[in-house]
Length: 387
Image (cartoon, rainbow, N blue to C red; front, side):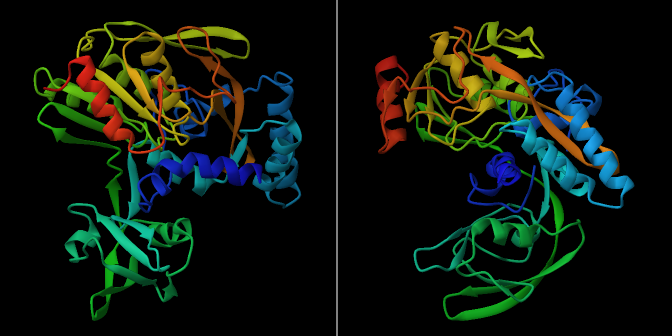
């Protein structure tokens, strides 16, 4: 259950937030090599892994369990999972080599798949909700609204979206997958080649002439700079709605870069690693005057909460929506025998005002559950962001 929960949180931004594109969370050396949750440990040297519970003892126990299992011809990753479970680390997780490679690829903003977003319709059918422009599905003529009947003969209707996504994703670029499709009275089978695609975690659209919405689905490589670019390109005088609903976090460095788009500099968050206090700062030069509303919900987690907390505490934005998830802990990776990787909690982060978020989350300035974007526009009008 612990490992399943951790993996779900890691991959939420890709599997669920986008109504399920076929991808999973590769790592990078990042200027701020720190993750505010399971979705970013890959940016750290595995030798840096420690836990705050019992100091080095936990990481040593996990490493020893994996090494002994491998020597006995058993599963090193399974033994490591059991050791993590005994440690009491709620967010601890273990990945085998292939899982970690997939996980790290998505942190780089990439995934292997066919470029489909899917959802389960009211009648139980699996329906294509979006097709990635230029992807294999797009080139094959698949369209939003098409019925995805099967994947390599496996019936997709009535199945969990995550299972559908896993089968679409496959294991490698260039591999083929046969999709059974339907459109109106027509039914056909289309074979497409999987490819390495961008996750498209930042989208921008105009809600009106004076309101720009920037939606960030996850903080993967490059998303922070994409947010900065979107802010710079917004029409003069326009307000911005920063939509972080369903954002399960990612690379902290990207969240700090995103914060730098709205702040003139200064503190973004503090955190501790093995008891040592550290801080994260905005780079400066951000648009500190443009009206800003941040929309959040129970799916806003980790690095997304770090960004929200910074903008709220510093009076830079009004937050609208519902209480965030409350994932304020930090994980780092530890390399194990057999190529597995264990992610173990090393500390917690806090907002500029010193508020811890783990288990608490962020309460929005304007709590709403119905039509949050409409409420956000109304707030912007009061801030001078609409005419």
